[in-house]
Structure formats: structure tokens, C-alpha cells
Amino acid sequence: MKDMALWNEGDWIVTIAAVILTAFLVIGALAITRPKEEVMGHPKGLYVLFFAEMWERFSYYGMRALLVLYLVKHWLYSDGSASLIYGAYTSLVYITPVLGGWLADRYLGQRKAVAFGAVLLTLGHFFMAFEGDGSGYANDPTLNVFWLALALIIVGSGFLKANISVIVGQLYPRTDMRRDSAYTIFYIGINLGAAAGTIIAGYLGETLGWAYGFGAAGVGMLLGLFVFVLGKPLLRGQGEPPVPAKLKEKVAGLNLEWLLYIVGFGGVAVIWALIQFQEAVGWLLLVSGILLLGYVLQQALYKIEDNTGKVSSGSTSGVFYGGVGVLLATAAWMIVQQGADTIAAVGGVLGLVLVVAACVMEAGKTANDARDRVFAMIFIILLMPLFWGLFEQAGGSVNLFTDRYVDRQGVPTSLFQSINPIYIILLGPIFAGLWQFLAKRGWEPNTYAKMGLGIIQMGLAFVVLVLGANAAGNALVPVLFIFLFYLLSTTGELCLSPVGLSAINRLSVRHMASLMMAAFFFGTAGGNFVAGFMGTLMGEGGHGGEITRDGALDVYWTMGLVAAGIGAFVVLVSPLVRRLMHLDRLRDDDVGDDLLGQSEGPGEAQGAGAHPETRPAG
Image (cartoon, rainbow, N blue to C red; front, side):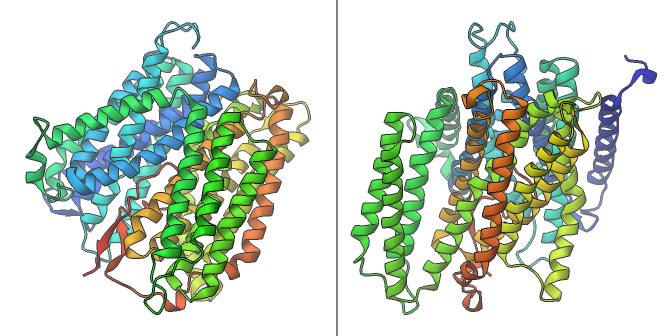
């Protein structure tokens, strides 16, 4: 063991993180084992979910902090290829919860789905510890084990993250005033796990060996599984299958429950094949995005009743379907050409013009508040790829930039990714109080203004980083500017992420609630892939080679200014877009004020866990 006199900043940081984590575990164990039904005014089941989710986030963020560094330094991928793998991986993590949540709502129930997801995640993190012989991806067959590990984590996240927050809500009646504070406690667990995992697993991976870091993440997930299984009696019977007898029905000679688990492992096989072809993931996202948003608009234009109870005659449907068809044809052309060209640009513009024209013509025919609210939600969804494409640079290109060009003063690179969850814990309550303070005085910005401000701050994060790097000249960039980068990206996240999720939650009509929430997370998934793609533009000649200092700063400067400009535009048009929400005529129906699996609290970038099953009022 290293003499304490020789400890550097990284050694002290990881020790402090371990002490804080241990303190939380001891306090939690004492609280859960007390004979009382509730602890600090909340059922013990909340703390079971708190620690289970904390360990899941420990494992996920610990692995995420190391992933790009591991790909470049161990598997010898180019910076561009590593960024693209990172983007494909994180985007798929956002898509699988849609299926995982649906299977839980229809068949498994949230508890069984979470337990199954935790098993897959534990296996995935342990398989990440298989390093191979170190000869690189081109020569080492152990790479297939690495792809298997990613596939297990992606599918496991789909089952777990889609459902664990649902159980939090189920512990309380819908009108229980403790619900908000329960989710606040839960989100503290999320970010505590994210910070501790990044620090501890990142430190072990970079100082002792990759297997130690990924192994620590696996141990964390295994502990989360134990907490969840052993804490089942404290969940008060929540999260059970909707029709338990149905799981025992025979299908192809097997109980339906076991067949669903086999389907889950089949999903692992599909993802194992897909994740190896990252560009295919991008094309799949493009085509799926056109189809999903096309379906959302088709429902809004031609299926939703207007204010008089009538449905559109569909006179503009030819224009609308023609536009969607042109967009799909353009996507197919881009896939064949493996990129965009003049024909793709013309086709994209033509398709969008036709779709927008159909929307404008329908909007002019009759007043329809529900349709207008769908337009307002689509505006939010379209902002997601922009914001998350910039935000997720933190785990990709910014991680590599920090490793090579920042004066880290002996601190392992991966530990800097803990700054975001720490800022979230510190600033989340301040932002919540700020909105309440402004609202009481009539000064609170509207939903779209907040989101625009979030995008501006995300852009300014890159501008500040570039200015700091240029001021340093040829010297390493002072670490202060990395802290400022994460500060601005975190405040931007707090302005955008919970606000956007809340708006989708609030504006969705009953029969489209699940569809709109899926579209929201699909937009976020697209942003994650965009983040990986942007990382390929910072190398020599912009062709996916090693990220250079000047190449990264040039792209960061452009991204920052463009984002700040778009954010300013969003703020300017926010009063106009807000009118589409028709808040003065928004009324409750038989859907409650929340969706099952509502927001897990602000600032949990990889949450993807708010599953949009509607909750009946009453």
C-alpha cells in the first residue's frame, strides 16, 4: 500500500469518496433494520430502492467513465472509432427501456423486470473485466466478450431503468404529499452512485488496471441486486405482475415468464450483433426517427378530435404522406451512399416542406388544442439531439481532451466525470427553489425559455473551455476550465432535462402519453449517437483519427457558438411556441398528474427510466 505521505490528489479524492459511500451504507443499514415501519417519514422500501439504484448508477457511471479510455488505450481503437462506439452504446441504452417498460407493464411487473435487468447488468459488468491479451481489437478474439458485455448492459438497463422508478411512485398514493420528497431522496441516490462509481471504479481502472475498475462496477451492481432481492418484503407488494397467473401459462411448452426471459437473452444476441456495426445504429436511428415522428404527427393531424369533437377529413393526407415518403426515400439514399450529398439535401428539404405544409394547412382548418400541444411537444423533442449531442461529449471527446491536454495535477482522467453528479446534488435543490421563487413573483421563464437558456449554457461551456485553452497557449489547459465546463453543462442540464420531461408529461393526451414519452427518449438517444459522431470530426483532417488539440478546439468553438445561437433563438420564439400549449384551457382528464415512472429528479443524464404508462386518476 502506498505511503500516505506519497498520496496525490487522486488518492485523497478516492479515499474521501469511499468514506462518504461507506457512511451512507452504514446509515442506510441502520435505518432499514430499525423495527419501525417508516424512516424519516418514508417507507423503508424507498431506501431499498435508493440503495439498489445507487449501486446500479455506481456500476453504470463507473464503466462509462472508463469506456472511451479503455477503447483507445487497451483495444487500440482510433479516437474516432472509440467515440462512435461510445455514441452507439449510450444511444441504445436509451432505446431499450421502451421495450423493458412495456414487458413489465403487460406481463412481468416492475419487480421481476428490475431483478432480471440487474442479473443481466451484473453479468455484463463482470464480462467487461475480461481484457484479453492486450494486442488490440484487430488480433484479439476476446473482443467478442467485450461486445457481449456491452449487449448485456444495454438490455439489462432496458429492464431495470424502465421500471425501478415506477416502484418509487407505487409506494405512495397519488395524492400523498411525500411523493416529491421521495423522488428527491431517490435522485440523491442516483447521483451519489454516479459520483462514487466514477471516482472509485475510474481510479481503480486507471491506476491498478482496467479489470479492477470494471470489476468494481460489477461488484457494485451485484450489491445492488442483493439489496433489491433481500429488500423485497419492504416494497409492500408493489411492482408485482398485473396478472400473476398469466405468467404461468404455457407458450411453446414453457411458462410465459421463462419465455420472456429467453426473449431478453435473445435481445442480448441481437444487440451483440448490432453494436459491432455502429454506423448501422445511426442509420437505424434515422429511419426509426422518421417513422416515429411521422406516426406521432399522423395521429395528431388525423386521429385527434378537435375542440368541437370532430376528426379531420384528411384532405391534406396526400401532402403529409408524400412528405414522409420523400424523407424515407432520402434516408434510404443516404444509406446506399453512406452519407449525405446534394440529392439527400434536396430530398430532406422537400420532405420537410411537405410535412410542414400539411401541418400548417390542418392547423388553419379548425381549432384543435390537443393537436397543437403535440406540435409543442415535437418542438421539445427536436431540441433533444442538439443538447445531448453536446452534453455527452463529456464521456467521449472531452474525456480524451482532458486526458491529453489538461493539467490534471495527478488526478486520473476519469475522475473528472464525477464533477457533474456532484454539481447536480449541490445545485439541484437550488434550481428547484429558484423556479419557485421566480414563480411567486411572476418572473419564472416559460418552459421553452428555460430550455433555450439550457442550450445557451451548454454552448457557453464549450466557449469557455476554448477561451481557457487559447489563453494557456502551448501549455496544458488549467483544470479550472474543466470545472467551469462541467458547471455550465450542469446548469444547462438542470434548465432543460427535468423541464422537458415535465412538459411532455403534462401535455400528452391520455392515449398518446406512452408514445410521446417514447419519442422524447428517442430524441435523447439520437443526441447520444450525435455525440459519438461529432467525436469523429476532431481528428487529423476530420476523418476519425487521433483527436488533436487544435481540431477539438475548432469543433468545440463552432459547436458552442451554434448552440448558443440556437438557444437564443429558442428563447426569442418561446412566447410563440408556448401558445401551442394552450395552458389556459388545459384540463385534467382521467389520467393523473404524473405518468408511472415519472421523473427521477433533475439531472440524471442516463436516466431513461421514466416509463410512460399512464396512471388513472382517482
